[in-house]
Amino acid sequence: MIVLSTINLHEKYIEDIEKEGLTYKFVKSSELTKADLNEAEIMISYGSSKDFKNPEYLTKIKWLHVMSAGMDEVPKEVFDKCIVTNSSGIHKIQMAEYAVGLILQFYKNLNQAFENQKAHFWDSNLKSEEISGKTAFILGTGNIGTRLAKLLSAFDVKVIGFNTLGREVNHFEKTLPIIELKNRLGEADIVVNILPSTNKTRGLLDIQMFEQMKDSALFLNIGRGDVMTDETMIEVLKNRIIRHMLLDVFNEEPLKEDSVFYEFDNVTITPHASSKTSEYIPRAYKIFKDNLLSLKNDQSMNNVVTFEKGY
Image (tube, rainbow, N blue to C red; front, side):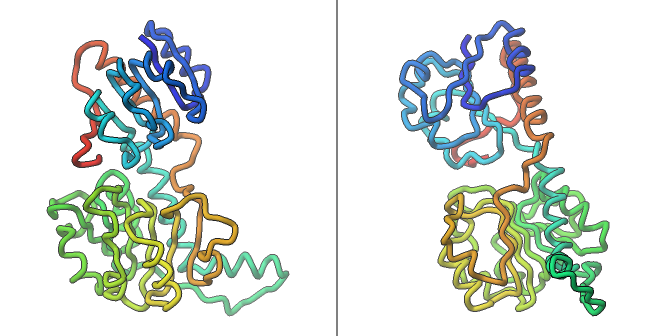
């Protein structure tokens, strides 16, 4: 059985795969051929659309494993052909920590402290704020959202979660259905988006949503860029509808050097980096290996994704 990977895995993982009697084959996304796809029975990918330009060539595919959580670029034709799994759950530690770091960096005014340091300037009047007592809305109550709720609660932040039906989730003071979001946004000091990209979430945060937020609100996006359009983000920033945006994801990445987003002083930009730590691949590979053994033993697999839900 041939395992086609568009991810250049470490030798130790290749050896582990081959110990299971499989043939590992690495091909860059840009160099995939019809023959490569024709012979693949298992495929490992980051889920990029570049890997699925010709899904009709996947004639023998039994299983696709995506080494990330996002599934929005995997076409329906692939779901129709095989089992599709992802690596949901591997991001919760690093992304929750990243979110807390950005929030604290903003409220503790650390960017200004760093600028003062570079200028050799000691400003004893540098102001910072406490997050204790603030209210945070977390859009998405899955693994990452739940971990973030737990961490923020330790700072005495009141954490409200939003999911599809408002089902209860640990570590949230309260959870509400996403349809109630617009009417409740005025209560939040901090709004964090961790929603996946689906037909129901794309464009969810329009300008009217931001207009419901407090002028002093902080918005953080570590979910998917397409939860709002570029036009919405630009209008929010240009008109200073809220206090500040912390953006780790965008509709088009990487941002071009002349991107208008670099011109605003009320946004903090990071390069889609919230999940990137040394533990990423080991965690993703463990899910792959566990599912590989399940496949070989004709057992049910974890993290199976449906096209309809997108997660």
